[in-house]
Amino acid sequence: MPLEVTPTEFRKNLYKLLDQVIASGQPISIKRKGIILQVVMPEQVSRMGLLDPHPDTIVGDPEAIVHMDWSGEWTPTL
Image 1 (spheres, rainbow, N blue to C red):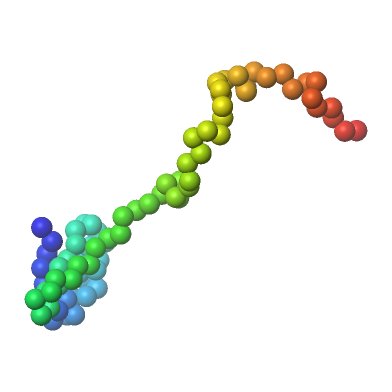
Image 2 (image 1 turned 30 degrees about the horizontal axis):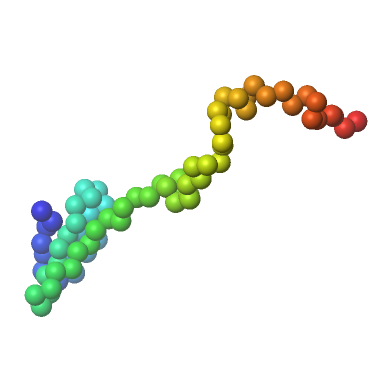
């Protein structure tokens, strides 16, 4: 249950209440003219979660790639 404060209480203790949200992750509700506003922490999203999936990148057994013989395909430049 989020802590509910009035706009006046929120204004008086703004930084303390914001620090409380950061520390606990619990939202704070501010009721004004019958409308409830909330200060909440955003969901943390990892950068890896933002990547588009590519499920069909490797077709076949990935272990087979490790054991492939590329010696006939590559020659060192001198």
